Length: 93
Image (cartoon, rainbow, N blue to C red; front, side, top):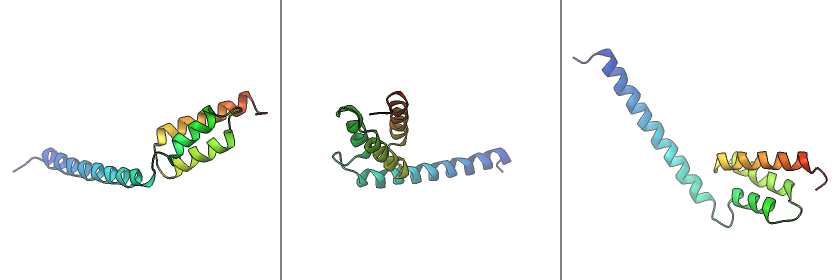
């Protein structure tokens, strides 16, 4: 007979594996959504870095789209932070 700890650990392990599979499936679906030329994070970074003055409103919209669709969220939130700093430092641009 297994101990309660072993039984609990087994259930926790199975739950973790199932959660991991769901997260990987979600990422696979999101990966099919954007091609490199339509990637909102890339478009947002391009709007910030390749235009003079930076197009902060356009970049912010791209980054927010990425966050809303759970696409490269860490990079999109970083981009939103960069936009906020740009708007604070140079509000006239």
